[in-house]
Length: 258
Ligand SMILES: Cc1cc2nc3c(=O)[nH]c(=O)nc-3n(C[C@H](O)[C@H](O)[C@H](O)COP(=O)(O)OP(=O)(O)OC[C@H]3O[C@@H](n4cnc5c(N)ncnc54)[C@H](O)[C@@H]3O)c2cc1C
Image (cartoon, helix red, strand yellow):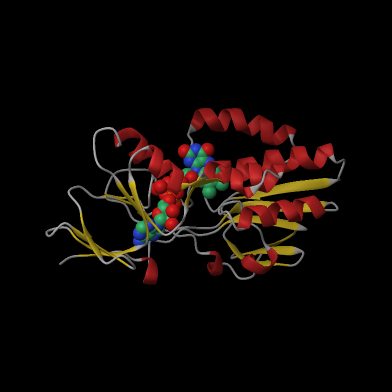
């Protein structure tokens, strides 16, 4: 049983095991293709892989439901529909939770590239953009870890790079005057990728005229501006933010135990 209906598990193991996919969506969202939707205008269907035909092709079963609790001893998963289902082996791949409401004004005045409802909205805003300053960055996320890994202040900032370069390309093609400022809550921009990538991307950002601001925690997005927790503010005609990624809480929380 694969909670989250992850396709990687399915493709690797469907010829060896009877796979049951469980997830609330009718499709698997290929998030890495969302920048093409948000910044190049590809239809959102491009990022949605319908699960029913994939399950048919791979002789897998698929149930459209969310798991609400699991009982590892009894090997049972309770679903919000379809009752309780037993499994021999459980893969929990329910993804991250993005908290758009944590930043004041983000849903109303800001944009994101991270989900399939936000990506087409960003394309609409970019298409209607008449010029001016663009501000893009990731919000502060906090999490713990049980292993020795770098203490990052935000998840992967790759999508920020995609916004910078793809939006820049799009606007240059349309000859629309703009500036791009990128902010990060970390002390280093692209903290997760290491020195080699820093060495490559630094000159590219410089050549593109991108201003990079480090140690900036976004607190508020408003029409025409972005505010940070240190009280500073940037003018912005288009604001794109990766929201905080908290651990699962409330109805997102999957309970374990008998
Ligand atoms: C814009 C963008 C670009 C990216 N680009 C890249 C890239 O180039 N390369 C790369 O490697 N990574 C990239 N990533 C990261 C990558 O998309 C994620 O790491 C990946 O999607 C994580 O996969 P996942 O299956 O763990 O979670 P998800 O893709 O989040 O899927 C989790 C699924 O679980 C479902 N679910 C939630 N709760 C339950 C429940 N209780 N029961 C059952 N199902 C549940 C959700 O509905 C969802 O369908 C990018 C991400 C973004 C946002």
